[in-house]
Each structure stands twice: as C-alpha cells, then as structure tokens.
Amino acid sequence: MKPGTRLKSAACDTEVMVIRCADGQIECGGAPMGEAKPAEAAPLSSDFSAGTLMGKRYVDADGKYELLCVKPGKGSLSVDGVALVVKDAKPLPASD
Amino acid sequence: MPTDIQPSGPALPLARWAGRQLRAMAHDYGLPAIAALDGATLMGERGSNNGYTISGRTSAGLGGSRLLPTRDGGWFALTLIRDIDRELLPALFCDAGFDHTAEGAIDAAVVRFDCAELVERGRALGLPVASADEFPASPPVEVMVQGEHRQRVGGDRRLVIDLSAIWAGPLAGHLFWQADMEVVKVESRTRPDLIRRDDPATFDLINQGKANILVDFASEQEKAALIALIRRADVVIESSRPRALRHLGIDADALVREVPGLVWLSVTGHGASEEPANWVGIGNDCGVAGGLSRAMAELTGEIGYVGDAIADPLTGIVAAREGLAALRSGKAQRIGLSMSAIVAMALAEEQAHDRAALDAELRAWGTSVGAPFPNVPRRAIQGEVRATGADTARYLPELAQC
Image (cartoon, rainbow over all chains, first blue to last red; front, side, top):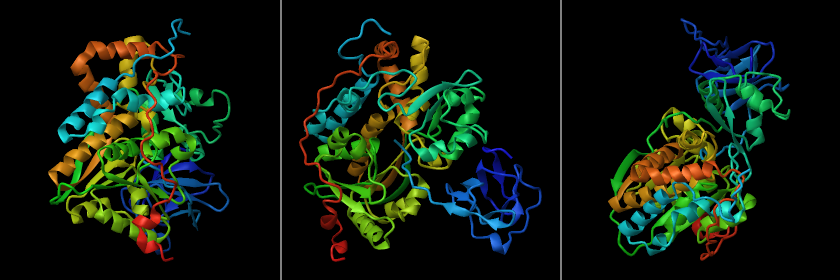
C-alpha cells in the first residue's frame, strides 16, 4: 500500500486517501477497505459505526497510519481492529 | 536578465477590466468613493507597497506558489505555505519516503506524473493546486439559494458581516465600506486573519473603517450571538469550505431562506457547490486555473504567474458588484463566486474588448522577469483600523456580562 492510494469502504460510502501507512489491514465499518468496491456490501459492524467526517484526518496512536476522509460515510476507521482517532486539524479558508 | 529595467514595471494585465467594473459599479449605484478607485491600484497596491518583483514561475512576494513541468508537457501549479500541507506531499507523489526538504525533490517528483493526475489527487487531498490547461469547473457567479424579499428604507445604513480572510473577501468588504455601508470584520479567537500579521500595510488598506469583533467558535454562546448578528445583517461575506462552515455551526442556506433580503457571498477557489466546493484555491494558483498563465505563455513561449495573487482582487471586485446588485433586487440570495472562473471570465472579456492591448501587456509582463512590480500611488488610510476584538461588546452585547 502506497501513500496517495484511494481506498473505499466495503460497508458504507466512506472513501479515504492514504497519507501514511504500514503493513496492517485498514478497515472501515469493521470490514477491510479496498481500491475497488466489492460487488456485495459488507455488514456495518456496530463497534465501528460512529461515522467518518469529510476532510478529517484519522490517525493511530503510534503515528504509523494517517488517512484523510475524502467522502464521508456511516462506518468508522480502524487498523487491525483498533479504532483510529481524528487528528486535530485547523479549519482553513477555501480561498486565498 | 532583461536589459531595460524601468523604475516602474510593466502594466498589470486585466487592470483595465478591473477599472471598468469599478466605474460601472460607481455609475450604477451612484458611489463617488468607488469612482475614485482604479483597477491597477486595487490589483497592484500589495505588490507595489511591498516592492515585489516579477518572478516568472515562482509567485511574487513570498513565493509560495510554483509552476512546475509535468511528464505530459503540462504545467502544475502548487502552493505550499502551510506545514500541514507539506505533510501531504508523500501522498501527492505516492512515495512514502518523499522528503520535501531535499534540493529539487518536488520538481523531480512532479515530472514523474501527468498534470491531470496530480491536480485530481492534490484536490482530493485539499492542496491548493492547478493546471495551466484546465477549464474552470464552476461558473464565475452562481446564485445557489434564494429567499424572501426585504423592503429597504433609503436612509438606513446597510450592515455587512465580513467573515472572510486574507484578500478577496476583505476587499469586497472594503468596497462596501467605500459604498458607505457599516462593515463588521469577524475574526476567530483561534484563527485570526493572518494578513494582519504578515502584511499589516495591506491589512490596513482593505480593513480600514471596519468594526472588528472576535468570536470564540468553540463557545456555543458566542456562536449563537454571532448568528443573531448575522440575522440583522444585509450582507455576509465568507470564504470557508462547506465543512468548515458547518464546523462553525453556520448554515448559510438556511439563513438565506429564513432572513428576508439577506445577501450571502461565498468566496471560493473553484466554486461553492458540489465537488469543487471542497477544493482549495488561492490567488496565484486560481490565476493559473483561470488560464492566464497559459495565455501569457502562448505569447511569450515562457510560462509564469501574471500579477500578484491576481484572482483575489478580481474576485473582490466582482463580489462587491454582485452584492450591490443583489441588495438592489431586495431578494435574499446566496451567491457563490469562483476565483478561477472569475479570472477566466475577465480574460475572455478583456480579449473580446481589446485583444491587442491585452496581448501587449501579457507579452510585456512575461518578458519582464526580474523587473519590479508597477508603481501605484499609495492610498491614504481614511478610516480607523480597529484593533482585534475592539467592537465585540458593541455588536455582541449579550456576551458582555460574562
């Protein structure tokens, strides 16, 4: 997995851009994310259903993973079953 | 190096277009203070006052934006002014080991990709990027939502709430002040307008005469007080991406539907609706996205930035013009302004108006790398420049007792 890869959730509408990653399994809604959407949607795990927010960056505790949400959805993000958290980013103006 | 450096550089392309917009506004609405302004001054005062140099493929002034060649022969404009954006470069270039501090690393990475791929990925990442050969994704001016009419009494001073930052939005607010409106600049406690610190002379010029209030957007009470103020206003100017506005607890569309006659100006890089609303654009890269750098390259063979953050002043002028028209109509409306599309519109209109004169100016600009920016007269400060938060108690009295 390379930074810059766009991953789609199998369980909801979420899409992310990979900013930083290691060898673990990136998941959304409890299901592995992939570059293509699976033909059949995965069930949304109730443990990973807090939702993703457009434009937020999500990180793990060790700073090995960072994902940018480019399309929001109902699932929440995890790596190998461990939930990612929102990185505190400053809002910015759209222009100038 | 050019051999014929003049003490004052070549004329700013599109300044005559800007001047015509100002004169039309002054005539249509009977505004002598706006009749006294000229396009070259509003577009060139920052560069002139700060002694900018025409610097080709690097943007003038701080040099935060650069034009870089891509694998397919295109030109990619990348603006890097914040550390949080530099962290995204490994993702932009699909290279976990990318080190932006290495000499020439960005240039070498850009040339490995086609321009369109970099623009698409850069925009998804929220980076201010552009292609010299793109077509603006949105119309220059778009009425997004409409609401009820308000009957205005002639003598009442219009109230403008200016939530925008840097240059384009604040310039629109400045023109409303010139049109004798009461303008209140709103700054965030955690995120003040950085131009106050980085370029105080320009800040003073475009924010003089405005009241200044400071709002803590983490406080529900302060946000509610601000929204109550907005409900009393005639015009709102804002330049936030949709999610940032939501984060601030401001629902522009709902306010326009609810408050009769409220004119809401959304200043954006590339459009205020659908996907482009999430893209980031600033004055220099939006000038590239509007086709101005390509137009110059076709005349000179050398690509480069035209003017200083040229999309900003052009957009400020158009926003003021559209705001005045909407006020006159009395109908509540949210108007999206796209900086890149406004540059493309100005370019096309000026080409239609006087192609030979514009081409001569673009040719002169493109062949004057290293020359100073044109001198424009330094405008006098005629209004008070209020300190940050100086007027919070006056406009948000419900907060005064705490």
